Length: 70
Length: 247
Image 1 (tube, each protein chain N blue to C red):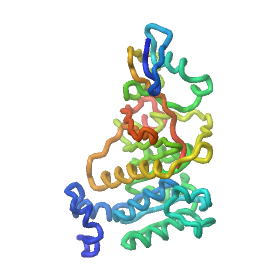
Image 2 (cartoon, chains in turn yellow, purple; image 1 turned 45 degrees about the vertical axis):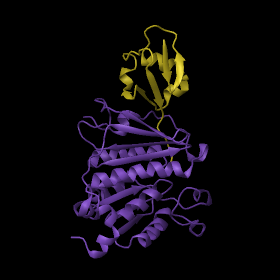
Image 3 (cartoon, rainbow over the protein chains, first blue to last red; image 1 turned 90 degrees about the vertical axis):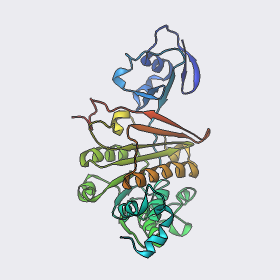
Image 4 (spheres, each protein chain N blue to C red; image 1 turned 180 degrees about the horizontal axis):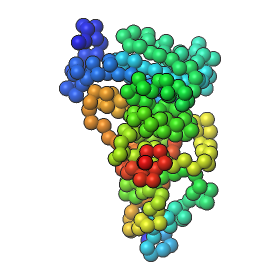
């Protein structure tokens, strides 16, 4: 299935992917341990819902980190 | 009742129907705490002082360094070595002698919070560390005070208004603390001054709108990409299991 992750076209190697699949595909194990947040089509997805939130073709997944600096 | 001097000084914002004399008086009766007087705190404090916020409390334990001058626009080479909050207070008082500026020349902590937060109307987070931001987030919820978060590194910025309530998300809802250290900051990846100015402008605007009774938006993280010069808004939801803002 084709989706966008942080604006880049990405092909996920599964038919019925969830947010958790997209994260598994896009982030390293170390990155998954750090604080980050996820939005699908600009709506925030809570961590508890990663495995139960399905993705549809052409969905836009944004993975973003808290910025530290000022 | 505004004095003639105040009428003249603030005339261009008083003429806005969303501000008016009533809004100006609200600004003059407000007490805003700015935590962090670096790249965000400098422009935020300038805009709020200029707008006539009655009392500003500036908090920072850091001293000015030469490497700050590229983006911390209140400071000059003569200020190097001096405390940021003290120097900023001096400059802001020159800019607007009609307001009161108070200095806390140390890093914000729970002890200061207990003493100062009961008198505060709005907290503005201009810090450069996640540890400080998580502390301010907890205190915002504990004291039921609005918190306007800002952050920027590289070309990227984030800002978010937290208004603690049973419907509104807090920072912990979005970015739960993991205990894993975050190493990227302005010192490691750099920062452009105008990116800070844009985020600081949004923080100042939110503060003025809130204090003048205009509509402000909670449950929204605004992210700025300085390369494309575009904003991206993420719609947030309060988390029932949040360790900070849910019972």
